[in-house]
Length: 191
Image 1 (cartoon, rainbow, N blue to C red):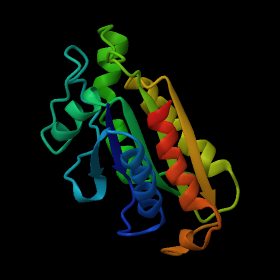
Image 2 (image 1 turned 90 degrees about the vertical axis):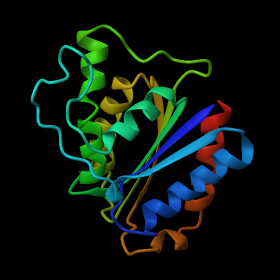
Image 3 (image 1 turned 180 degrees about the horizontal axis):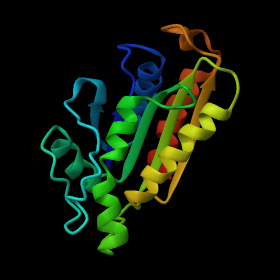
Image 4 (image 1 turned 60 degrees about the vertical axis):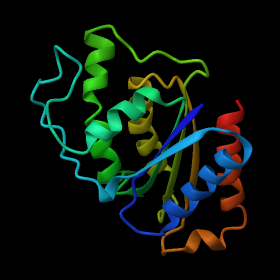
């Protein structure tokens, strides 16, 4: 089994990264799943240009670090996307990666060649954290994540969200957050 994790936060050692580390620890301590982690903020990722270059081939024609991500998405059995909520949505880093998966959309829906489910099926986990206490940010972020997951043939995903958490490291003061993230990682690979 292979697990792919995306850190969509620009804040080093922030709340999103702390939660993702716990989820990954849950995956690694309870399974033999190999984990590949991409810290999106540290990568050279250009936004989708809506150029149509992937329409006929299902392959993006832009040349940047997405070339490292595409094969990992194809090979993954489990995908974790961790992002802060900014202005009711996923971070720009997360959304840039998602938008660049338009090539998978073309491959799946135009060319009728979806990513195969593999031997373990494909499941996902969305981890979001934000300062606002209203759930609309989680709902909007999950809508984008759901479109991403379905495009890359992840038919089901769980959402783990924490609201009212803003200051760097504040998640450490949450009574259950780290345990919940660890358990979400465990559940992801045991299901």
